[in-house]
Image (cartoon, rainbow, N blue to C red):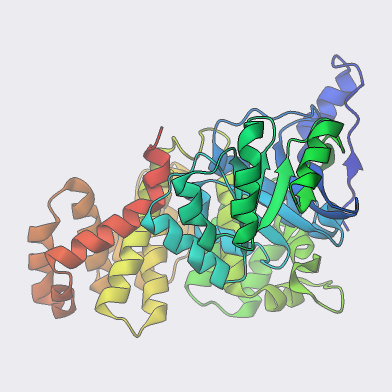
Length: 436
């Protein structure tokens, strides 16, 4: 279990020791969610950036990434949740990002923010996450609306905001939700009268200041090396032997510490504690480690928010497009799709690392030749897909696809209609970045 503390917020704000601690520590808020009999059933996990029990969130996706990293890796699930479930706020961007699959679905409930735009792709993504075992909650519901009625078949839990909801509309809202077999949570309960009303209306769970304000947990901050994370991703992409991945991890004690915390958490349901790097790799699996490493990279970007970072947007859309295009031209080759995605990720790594040319970064990371040659020489089908992706970003892909199809006939499957479909799906990865 990670060594954590529950932070007191009544100390003098001018205390130098406290200021120093806040630099060296990371924080996570949690607020209890109670059953009708008063039993603790879950916590909502909240973004906190200091010992102050409040949050100033400029980027929903980055805040969620940091909550996940802190709960899963830095503090640990056992220390954060005990035997209870955890509610985590997710924006549209995080819902569509594969890193959400890092969370064990039996422990976490995905709480869809009220600001999320509802459309067909969102509903399809929610349905996919529910098939993977996640429970989906709607956050800050204030009234019975046509949109809510349409969403109810696709969710499991509805959280009603008692601070904002009109009292005369609560009976119809509660009745509609309960009639469809969904769990009703009364949130932002601040008075005895509100609690009594929620119980009378049949609410199942309760949350708010009337019961408890959020606690702030803290732990010593780790700072995994970005270079090490990139090298680790490169090894996974190249299907390197276990011993090589183990050696790379051992070069970065901070990364090893977080990996061991992740695997030793209750997320994996292991009947024994993992004590070695090799056992941790085998227990988690390389795909899960890759998601975890990408999430750490997202969460550690402090110079610019995720939503406003044009590089993050470009890399996300490019790598996803290449993966989708690879699946279209070689539908039975999952490894090729993985390589295409990694080619997109590493095609702009020189910008991330501040190198003058891609060759410098590739040499430092040691990518498998198949991916390295595609980036540096545009070699093979991967190189052709990268060229097409770059052309699409510049707006002249049709002639490039036509030219590339002479050398690679498989690319003729990227018809204009297919290309438009793939491009739209890939753009959804970065759509949330562009929304105000």
